[in-house]
Length: 115
Length: 111
Image (cartoon, rainbow over all chains, first blue to last red; front, side, top):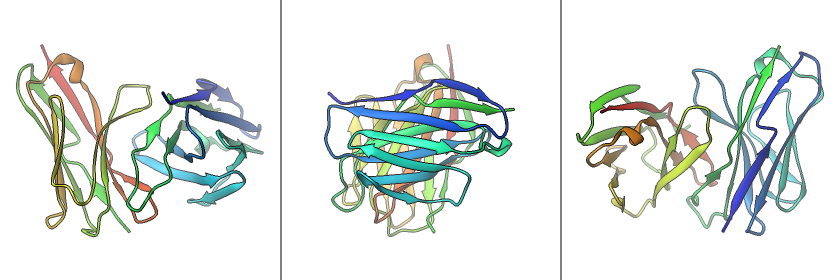
């Protein structure tokens, strides 16, 4: 069966510090991978998605970047965190969609607090 | 751009009552639609995926309907239990397979 892992589970970082969040998927090959952010009182916002190694699409201009160095590894990074980067970061995967979208499966999330 | 709305934002029902959760979307050229459950501080759990060609999908006590012409989807949970307390999110797929989420309905089932 497929599983998705995220770490760390929680993170408290000062403003201006770097960030690296990691997501890995097991039990499937060549998945679509997604990064979402859920800010307090707001809905989920798609940040990045990837259909393959080295292929990253950004949905929202921001202080963050994403990379996919391996087939089942997705990394979210920042060089300098802002207060507004605080939130709950969720990674998700799906089988490559054949038109219309396939079920997306979410990881447990990382709670990021920037102070 | 697709906009997804969930009303009400919060709902409280006594145990045993049926739950009806509403989701509306602005673009009727919807592709698939997915319902999720989120417990406090946790990730999302997929409940049901309704394909654009389907009118409804069932899993156990859960039944989701899709009416593209009216821009609505409804999630029914039969005989609610305290363990059903959570936030329920609906999300619509666009043609690229990307999800647009509603803000969710927070459900409390009281014993």
